[in-house]
Length: 256
Image (cartoon, rainbow, N blue to C red; front, side, top):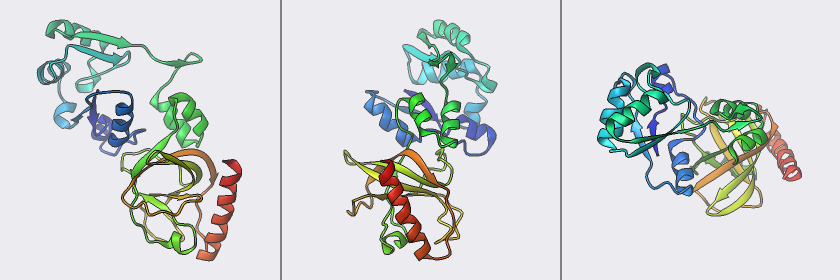
C-alpha cells in the first residue's frame, strides 16, 4: 500500500487537513487486512509540483519497481491533479506495469466517500459512519499522565493527546467502547479543553472506563465512539463537575 504523509491537502492548503485515520491507525488496519508493506511517502512542495509523468517514472516505476498498480476510478496525481486513470494506463504501458481501476463502492446509488464519513462524524452520527465504513469510528493513542483531577473526584480517566491531523467529533461527552490488549470496556469519553479545570485551548480525549481501575499509563488504547451524551460545559466547582459526571456515567450505563 502506497500513501502520502502528510495528506496532500495539508501541504497545498497550508493548514492541517483532518484525516479519518492517522498514520498509526492506518497501519494497524492495513496489518489486520494482511497488507505486507505500507509505504508513506513524504508529500512536500517538490512532490506537489512534480509532473505526473515524472511521478510515475521516478517513483512508481523507478523507486518502487511496480509491476501492477491499483487505484480508484477518480484517482488524480501529479501537479494540479493533471494525471488521471487514462494517463496512468498509458504510462503503465510505457513503463511496463499493469493498471487496475477499482470502481466506486456505492450506497443506494451514491458514492461512499471520506466526505460522507467526515460529515457523519461531525454530525455525531456514529451509526451512519459505521454503516459507511463497516467499522466504528475511533481514535487510537498512548495513555498519558494528566493532572489526576479526575482520579481525585472519583472518576479516573485515560488521557490521549490526539494527532494534530486527526478528525475528532465535536467537543462533548460520548458513550464509547475502549479496546485494551484484546479486551473491550464500556467508556465515557470527553473531547474538549476541560474548561472547569484548565484554561488551555489544547484538545484532549479523556475516557473513564467503567468498572476498571488498573494503571494503564503508557499503554495503547482504541476509543470507539458510540453515542453522543451531552455538550462540554464549564462548571463552577469540582463538586458540580463530579455530580454531572455521575449522571453521565448512569446515562452511559443505561445506553450501553
